[in-house]
Length: 159
Image (cartoon, rainbow, N blue to C red; front, side):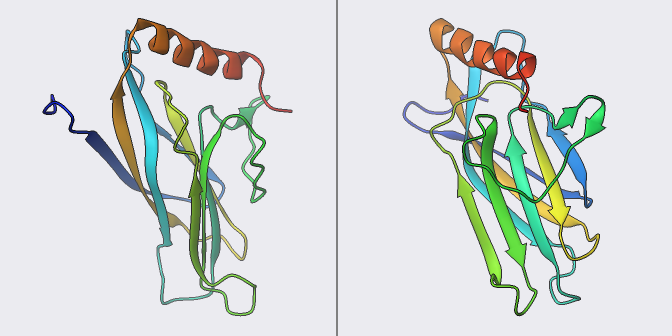
C-alpha cells in the first residue's frame, strides 16, 4: 500500500507474550528496501485489576537465543547496540514503580525482523504489547547499511 507524498505509513502489531518468552515480528524483505523506525511501544498485564505484577518487555534487533538457550531477563542495558526499546508495567504497590514507563530509540532504522521479550518479576503472568512502526523507504545505500548492521549483530552476538 502506497502513501501519499509526505505521508507516513504506520504498521501496528499487538500480541500477548508469556513470561520468559520471545516473540518474533517478521519484517524482512528480499531486497531490504523498506526500513522501519520504532514509534510506540506499550505494554499492559493481562489482568490489570488482579494480583500485583511487574513486567519488563524489551524489543531487540536480534534473537535472544545464545548457545541454543533463550536468555530473557529483567535487566535493561542502554549500551546494548541491538536494543530498540523497553517498557515496564507495574501494579505492585510498594515496589517503587506503579504504572507504566517506556523508552524507545526512535533514531534506529532497521529492515530485518525484530524480537520482543518479556519477564514478569513477581510471578509468571503474561503481558500484552502494542507496537507502532513507521515505514521508511530506503535507497540502495541505506538498505545496504541497515542490512549489514543487522548481519554484523548476528555474527557478533552480545556477551
